[in-house]
Picture 1 (spheres, rainbow, N blue to C red):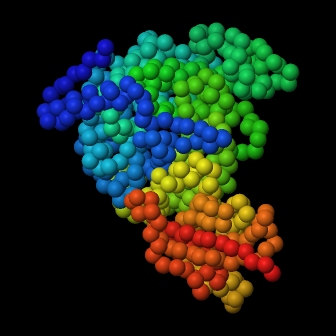
Picture 2 (cartoon, rainbow, N blue to C red):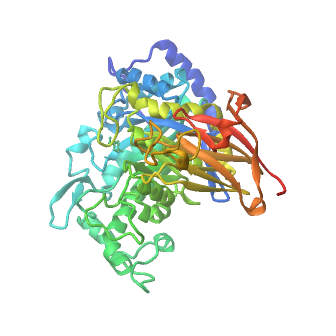
Picture 3 (cartoon, rainbow, N blue to C red):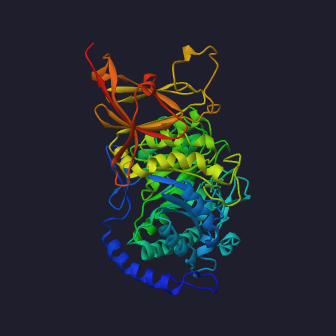
Length: 564
Ligand code: DGJ
């Protein structure tokens, strides 16, 4: 049974809040007992939706800084989340803060967080910073951090103790699991009826830097065992003809990394399974990416965190951690080519695409169109928080509104139609592009139509009209264009984008036919999801394609063809 300690000063809840929580708790028990409307991920025809309150939900999130998980830090988080027009906050819950002394739990921060999220009308994705945070044990309680006997660290090939806790530490797993289960039980109690918390990330950027796997005796013994059948069924042997055998026999040069991935995935599975048995929220893991070079991925060479859920071991995670719904890429590679390849590799019929972290530098904002256009569950730039901290060069140099603004304008365009967009994505109607570093036009294939998206254009006229062919529209010095499309009828589209020109041409049944805009409406969706037309684009505004300005713009476009 969970014990709660209320140390003086640690608990900020007032009596009336406690009463309200108790009332909510009994409703929660009824709702959660039925499990009917709990958030969950559904899959159909290889596409996915995050169902929240019974309908697809688009996660337009921001992630707070690592140390903002305390009540007094929250005002600066809410302010940034509000400015960003985000509907979800991703924020840590640290093992060290909920169980500072073994067996004595303090959920005061969680209570404050959930109550304030409701006041701010945003949902929460909680990040469990337990055994591993960016691979290290920094967020474990002191009673874990410094007790190598009970909570062993990994041992490297030369017998040296690593910084990283071992996935073979049975005591560590039991203790982490106990704390996580206590957290999930508490969430069920306070939030089962309201479902403010919609997903939980289990651990944070797991794996190990500099050491391929654990070489301690327990790990060595497991390494010598046959590869489990469920892993073999998914992750093909690297050695030709090696249908079964131990890890080295089957996976050769890949054996260490694959074994470590399996060991960590199993550990996470145990925690996730136990947590979901108590309160069944969707759960996921996030990944510190390895470079998405050409396939097949070469064996680990100390070039990324071994054992993390990199794109090349998603199958091992699927085999070993069935209670994890997906692995999501943390995108801190600004290059458009790498972003595109990463999204392709993480989006699979068995792995919903969700970007749990992305740099908050302005250049990343255009990727929101590409990510949401691909039908992702959602996206979350990191550091959407006015704490005076900048994680430049990964993210923005700014820590104020200037950091939030590039994302805020995009989110503001999506926000009113977020539920509708999530449904369209689940139905496979959406596509998206972000301007590439090469600034080249891109063609989007839609049913019966191609849309060519070009960048750096002036809004009027064609490039050949210009005397100076190297003259470009101002504000396009660095790539910042993007467009997301939803095909809502055979010839009808909703598109949202910025700094881009779109031209439609017929394809398939419409191929070769002359076409025209039947109608181009600029407008927005209201809170009820109803289209509100603001003006009709025609004349100069359509003669040279649909030229979206720097401010994200939503258009409803109807195309038509005629007989030549
Ligand atoms: C990725 C991690 O998951 C985050 O917690 C944070 O440390 C960023 N990297 C860097 O700011």
